[in-house]
Amino acid sequence: METVLVENVPNVHESFIWFIPLIVVAIYAISKISEEFWGGKNKIGMAVLGMQQSGKTLWWNALTGQERGGQTTEEEIESFTLHCREERELHLRKSIDIGGMEEKMVKYRELVEENDKILFFFNIKEYLENTMYKRYVLSRLDLITTYLTIEKNIYVIFSYLDKLSDSDKDFDTISDEIQNKFKGENIRMKCHGVNMTNPQDVELLKMKIFNPKN
Image 1 (cartoon, rainbow, N blue to C red):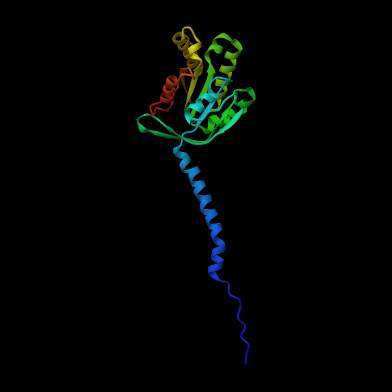
Image 2 (cartoon, rainbow, N blue to C red):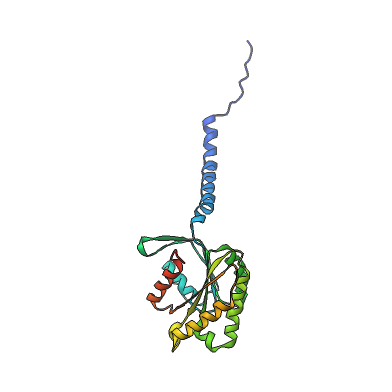
């Protein structure tokens, strides 16, 4: 009698089970890539730059509802949803809260190029009373404008407005000075004054920056 050799045929069902974890991982990876690529297009990118202790972290706190204290060097801000008036929701992309130290200016190019809205905070009282501080403010604004490759709004935020005796006059003077100094094809300077410790001021600033007409 002839001996019939039967080859071991792999169990198709068992082989498929081995592939399930790989399939799950692949689907998850594709979904995350799609979320970043397609979902990111519907999110607003915002860069918050400026001088030391000028209100940048207070601004992030007001938007995210978190409480970060002290002087920031660099801290990641996760993407979040901002609830606005008239039941509008805005989705903001991941960003960073960077300090106002001079060495952090190396981040400016990347932040300006990658984000839709550019905010620059400085202390208006220091600007008026300290010539060197004023030079630093203007040189940083000048640097930001050199990184603009397309037209974008630059929101120049004068913090500590409440510390001035004639805030309206001082605001108008500095606003005109900055807007006249920085003009160009891609430059749209929008100046706003704020007391970052006043919730009403902060809410008004939110409306001005995130209003779709801006």
